[in-house]
Each structure stands twice: as C-alpha cells, then as structure tokens.
Image 1 (cartoon, rainbow, N blue to C red):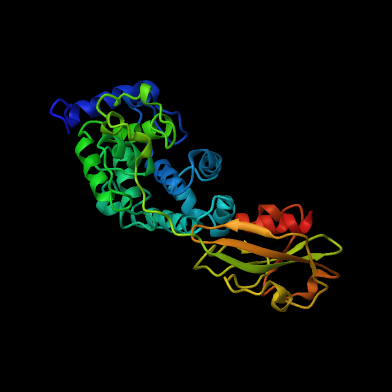
Image 2: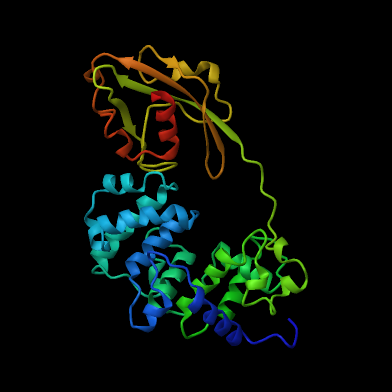
Length: 360
C-alpha cells in the first residue's frame, strides 16, 4: 500500500457517505435514513434474507422473501408452520437443505431463545444452517456487532481494492482480515451492506464502473489496470453428467399425477418427486423401463430433461403412462395430486421440468 493511501477509517467513512446516497432498496433492509430516524432492523428478516441469499441472487429471492414474511411474519409463526408448507413455499429456490435447516432454526429460536435471535456470532453459530458468514451478517446488520462480513461481492471489491492476486478460495482469510480492518466500530452493519452494494452495482464482475466508484483513487487494482481480472480463482473442474429416468403416471379419469416424497436427507431431501431411477454416470438409458416403479403402458416422451446441480449435470428420460383407476396404487408409497394443485406441491425445479415435459 502506498504511503499516501488513506487510513481504514477514512476509507470506511467515504464509503458510508456513498452508501447514504446510493443504498439499494431491499425488502429486508432498513434504509440509512430510517436508521437515523431510529428504526431497528428485524433480526428475523435479516436471518431469513441471508439464508435465502446463499448461492442465490437478490432478484430470485425477493418474491420468496415477500411470500414467507407475509405468510409467517415472525420466527414464532414460522416455527408453528408445518414443514410441508415451508417446503412448498421454498420450492423452486433450490438448495433444499437450506429450507430444512430454516425450519429447524425457527423451531429452536422459538423454543430455546423465546423467539429472540441471539446477538453474537458465537451464539448464532449454534443455530441450524447458520455458518460463519451468516452469523457475521446477522450479528452486524441486525445488532451492529463488529464482524467481518464477506460474501462474493465483498471478495471481489476487496481483492481489487488491495490488489490481492492470491486465487480464491485460498485468499479468503486474507480478504476477511482486510474486511475486519476496514469495518468501523460505528455503523458496522451499514458498512457491510455498503461494500455489498458497491460490488453489486459498481464493482461488478465484468466492466466495473470505476469512474463512479468512491474508492477509485485508493483502489490498487484500478491503479495497476488489473481490476477486471480480480479476484483470481482456481480453475473449476469439469462437472460430470449423470443420467436417469422419470416416470409420470396420470389417472385417465381425473388427470391426477402420482407423486412421492424423497428421503429426508441427501439431495433434494424431503421434496416431492415423481417415481424414478437412480441418477448415475453409468446409467444405461436403453434399460430405463426396467426401473419403472410399477407395470403400466409407459410411453417415452420426445427429448430429455436437462438440469444442472452444483456438482453435476443431469439428463433424464421421461416416460408417461395413462392409468385407469388411480386407487390401484397404494397410498403408503405416495399420493395422487390433482391437476389444479399439482404445481403447488413441494416440487424442485427438476421435477417441474419433468412434469412439464410429460404433460404438455
């Protein structure tokens, strides 16, 4: 760092001045103006938004957040909800272990903390589904605790500001140390949100608007002409492709579809699905019918369903069978869902794709 570079306190104060003018309006956020008027952030809304935002965009989360907070305005309301209702409301947002932990966390806060979220990182880390980032974000934004909050936006901004060329994820401790140094004792929550906003609106991954950045003069990455190349990342390994088959049974009289629930743990745990095969890299698509859940006149649909998970791509052959008399299948293995409520089930995105392919 050059000797003429400003102190961390001056950097943070400059950014907070920018934030006071340019803060994004988000449904879970208390604006800087309202904070000055005495409004206090709701820890429940901060926690809910942070869990939803893990590996998901703000644009994707907004409608889900509005649905959850209108249906369950407090953590006690969410704790009193049925798990199936929570999973249905979450369906389509992905990473379903987050939804299961969301319910577990609400239950614990309601029962063991009298409906009040703990206000320190140490206590927050004891809650289901709350890791170091989420604990720091809640402690800082909801309770104004001094904590280093580092998400993807923060990693990008600080890698450029301090010209950190160590690739991620190795650089994470170094970036967190920079964030801890920059975070002020006064308004630490607003500062964390300010860095996030800077990354989301100005210091973007491609073509950052450096001319508009309040840290432009101090940014070592900008001075070196390397800002857009940062942060460095370890090259990703190629995702494997798994294959499988899905079977959509339709009652010919009512149009109801046979569904079942996935095991509570593991990928898409507790979500709703149509019967199907295992998903594997060596699955023989030509033998798909041998994996049918019961005897029926299964007809293969044209094409295949493609979906991408975090660690693999998936390709599914889709089969459909018309059945006369939906009661011939035992309810102990699943249930029939009427066509007018079918897509209100707790269906993950891949199953919605399967049903669309089968029913169109």
